[in-house]
Amino acid sequence: MLPVAGAFMCRNGRSLMSIVYFTLAAAILYLLSDWILERVEVTAGRRLQYRSLVFFSILLTLAVTSFALISYLTGNTHGG
Image 1 (cartoon, rainbow, N blue to C red):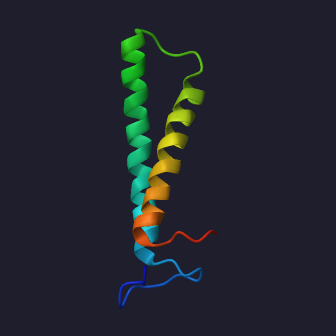
Image 2 (cartoon, rainbow, N blue to C red):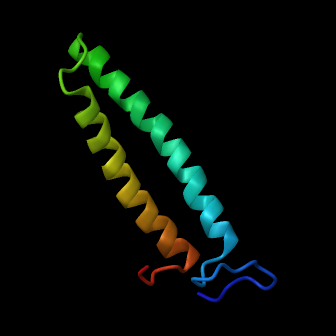
């Protein structure tokens, strides 16, 4: 995908908007992961023993999939 005309480009060739998309996604995913963990704990009726590990697993899964989708949609499918 070609960059949008007039888009600001970073040194590695990514547009500035890609950085904004990734940053917004990270903030939203953090809040979403916390909400999912709260729902799991309410369903279980107790706080989970390894709460941090469960939170990390939820966040990692959401981040990998959504960041791959953002990279694909913005045309930044090259590595690095």
